[in-house]
Length: 356
Image (cartoon, rainbow, N blue to C red; front, side, top):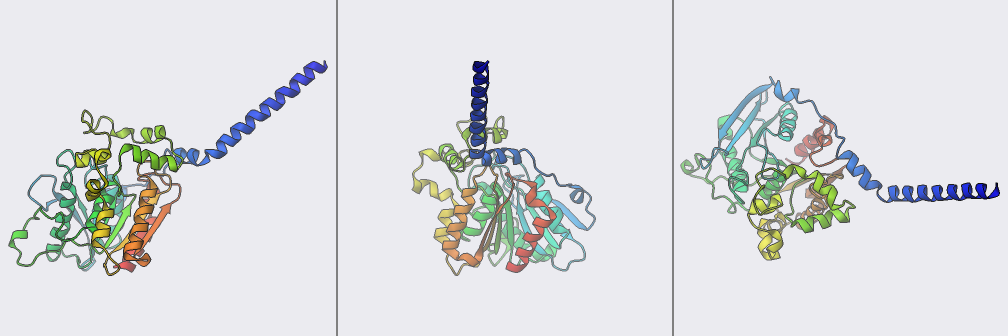
C-alpha cells in the first residue's frame, strides 16, 4: 500500500516537472508563438470604398514611358479640391509580382483620394521582364512625368511625397536618396520636348516595411535567428515564392533574382551599389531637404524589422533626428492591414501635412 502511494507521489512530481519544463519552453518562445499567431490572424479591411468611388475622376493606364507596356500609371483625382497634393504610390511584391492595383495600393488610394490627395500609382517592369535597375528607373521616370504634367492634370507637384511597401518601399527609398543624375536613363514621354530638365527628387518618403537591405539567404536567416525566428518558420512564411518566376532559375531570393547575381558571391563594395545605405552616405547630409517616415510590423517574418531599424539609424546619423521617424507597429506581420486602418492612415496624413 505504501509502495503504491510512493509511486503515485513520484508520478505527480514527474508530471509537475514536465509541466514546469513545458511552461519554461513556452515562456522562452513566447515571442515566437505570438509572431506565428499574428502572422496567421490579421484584420481585413473592406475595399468597397475603393471599388465604388464617386468622389472624383479615375484615369487608368496612362503611359509615362515608351520602352514597355508595363510603364504606365493610374491617376485618381478628387473633385472639389483645387490643385490637390500629388501623392506617388509604389506597390510591392518582391520585385516579381503585383501591379499598381495591388491590394495594398488600393488601401492607400481609397483613403488618400478621399482626403484630398491626387494619388498616382506607378506600375513598373518586374524582375522577370528586366533586372535592376529597370524598376527604379521606371519609378524615377514616372515621378518626372508626373511633375511635368502637373498643370495638365491639375494637381500640385511642388513637393512630392512617395510611398512604397516592401519591394516598393525599397524603390521609394531609393527614389528619395539617389541623385538627379542617377538611374535616369529611361526618358519619360514628352521629355525631349522640354527646354528645362525636370527633377526626379521627392520631398518625403513613406517607407512601409521596405526591403532596404539586400542580403544572401544565410545573412537574412541570421537576422531572423537574432530575433528568435527559426529558419523553418521563415521558409513557411515565404512559401509563396515557390512556383513563381524564379522557379527553375539558379536564384533562391527575390533580391538575387532582381539583380541577377548571388549576393553571397559579391564583395561588400560590389554589393553596395544596390543598397540605399550606399546612396544615403553618398548623397545626403544635414542640409538635405528630405523627410522620411518608416513603418515596420514588429511581427514581420518576410523582411526583418532590424533592416528598418538600421536604415533609421543611418538616416538619423546623416540628415538628423528631426527629419526621420521610425515606428514599429505592434502585432503586425508583413503587409499587415493593421497599418492600413483609417486611424493609422490618418497618422500618415498628419505627418505629410506637417512635413510638406
